[in-house]
Length: 183
Image (tube, rainbow, N blue to C red; front, side):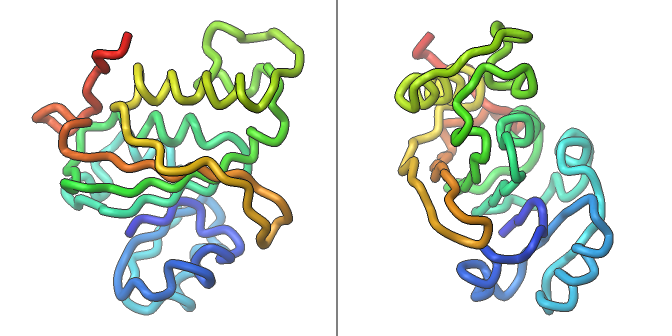
């Protein structure tokens, strides 16, 4: 279990607390200290998630659950994880809390998901947003199975979340995401 962004620990208390071991990572040292106190048996580290995924941190450990709860756009962090060469579990569930989905706009701040729309403005429908995200998942990030895209009520109010399933077919031999045949 890898929990990116220790945050307020709402998801940990609701879901991940039953995991006897895992790792969590957050930039905020105070959140990491609190996470270490709440999670005996877990490895808790302070660091930038995107930079960590690009380096050797835990690249030998094949996590079977990855939770990316970024309080905004999860896409740069999913891209960093999927595009890294690291050990992969045969089956990996990835949960993305998508704070960006509630805005469904072409704001420049999500360049990872909308590389061609940089600098553009305007609204889009939720269906259009989901279509763009699903196309990016298929063509750029290993083509995982989309298990769900749901609206949750939780610690910070209403959120949207993706549940993805990556299998061995999503990865090359060196552990990076496989280019999709869907393009």
